[in-house]
Length: 276
View (spheres, one colour):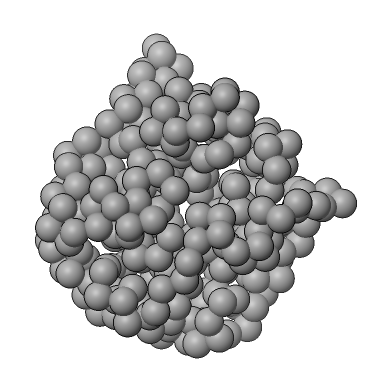
């Protein structure tokens, strides 16, 4: 039987994951919620707007982002999780570091969201297996410092599918059961505009694997390049277009977004029209 959260992912409407970046340098909203009290207030606001999940991160993974120490990352995220755990049914910790995962889960987080698919820190698989919580594995080519250095693939879809096969097998071999796994093809993480568009058009190739698929297109640079919008906060229209395409094709189970109010409204209207 699937984990309750994983089962919820397969409901009629995709779940909305609201982004809470407790960082000074995230690509879209770095510094807006760097203060813990501001981040907690923002998380509560996202819940009121319709977020099902809050994704708390203390290290920016934008292209060429600076790394932070694990100690600093923990100091950023733990107070925010503690301030939100009584309000949010689902809190994911967005981290590549095992110590941060453990501290966050101890503080009340109940999902792991790792952009490195447990590759960055060799101890992270032990934490994931021990806590037995839902785990999001994302595809990233290289590291945040190198991922956008002219990424190339023979076939981007096949490459990501092959990567997921290997990471799922690794998890299973090390005690993480498959009914906890979520897949994220990693829009913008080592991909060109063409790669990102092709991934969105072919999300069904990933849903065919039988796992929930997370789509993270919100305010991403490929939207800015297509629409000639350099300012991330001016990419709302493109963000909504991308998630609505996926909803229409029934190929995304979790939508990771900055603009929860607008996304929730778009999902509601789309569902109402389609079912009328």
